[in-house]
Image (cartoon, rainbow, N blue to C red; front, top):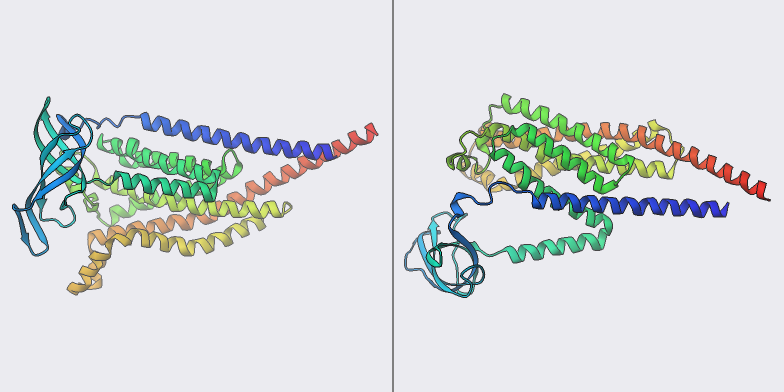
Length: 407
């Protein structure tokens, strides 16, 4: 009997290690494919005949800057040393254009590092435009700290979470955005990307396990609810996709055929899908723990436990969505209050209605996720545990019989 127990433990450990290896291998393969995948926009016309380089500011000339209160316009002239690229080591003159926008303009000082676009004709530099302060080194440090913290506190789960993070970024940049720019249907592309990311991210959480199926089903059904309601109420609210930031600039850049309204519709369920996954994983994990601690639990009781977890989580999740969507509009709300704008007018503005739509439709999806995930988890996970217990019992009896025969 003791040998049988050891064999059982070794089998479980082997299965866990195999699942971890397969999951990591899957992560490396997907990440590698996405990294190698071209967007089709790498050689955009605006950067043809130019060299992008990091430069160090040696001196500045602010004589051509016009200051009007807090607003500055004109141009700033800088002497620069090129740090990398074709012209590394050379000293060049660059210009920093100021448009009078506090949000977009930047002022350089001696010693600053910046990104610059160098226009050239073969080996002759014709013009140097300063783009912005160089921040990539600090961003990489921040990313490295984030990765280290994940691995230290969460181990292999932290590593897999980082894969999820990277794959999500690459999927949006390498697939979603190019497909939108190429005029493909934004709603269907958004649905496809959401399904892919949901299945991938939850797979990284659980690996090859029935919990992956449970959490994926709950999350995707909630996303489907958000998708249907988002499309319906975008039309009912008469909201045009131009309410999105930079949407009009995209049209003026030559992409007049884009369906901005459908892009806005897809942004509703894509934006809410993360919260859907979070809630479905929480409920699935809770039900799984209950079943593990009490293997003989009835599926109805397991469903009830999942619903209790879902009710508690929904109380904070809906508020999370509200804070997530409205956090960037604090200055706008301050402006409304300072101007004495009536609340009924505020709520009726198109861009405010768009945020209300995002928040409430996303919350509808969360309310749908909880009961569906609890029900599916209660049925599938208890059946799995029951089958495991029956199998274990049979194996134990067989091992006992063999031991008696040997004796």
